[in-house]
Image (tube, rainbow, N blue to C red; front, side):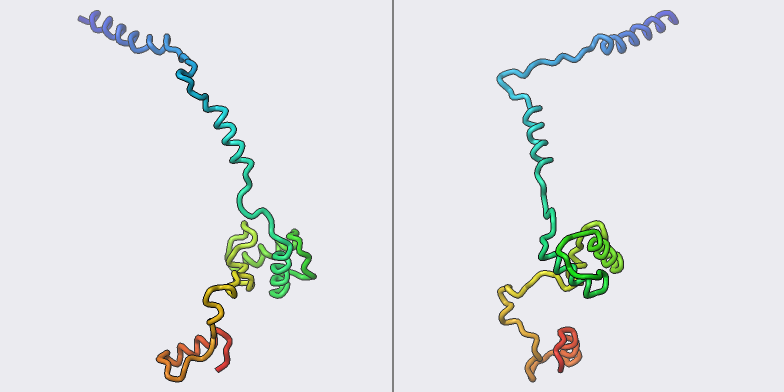
Length: 157
């Protein structure tokens, strides 16, 4: 009985190990005119790497605006040059860091808005009718809210 079990274990072990020893990969060429995808993929990868996305540089006019704003808030000294140089980058990074914003992207949109260089809405559809005047005398807006709006807009009461 013992010999039978031992021989059975040897036969099963050999059966499990033998197919992997004789196995080989067979590479067959594509059939029925199929296209080999490697050249298409390589071409596809080339174009994705070569394509540059997003804004690559800041226009000199915009750099002058940013430099003027940084000079105004005393983060940069001298005259605006229109070149995004190391001193401008350092001033912008310092300004953004002092306000708790990230310093990796130059410039951060929150920093531009804070510097007064945010989007211009003067050409908006309702910009012509926009007024920051006192409400009419019979308006139902609470007086403290009117005072808050006036203070925030800079209109004197």
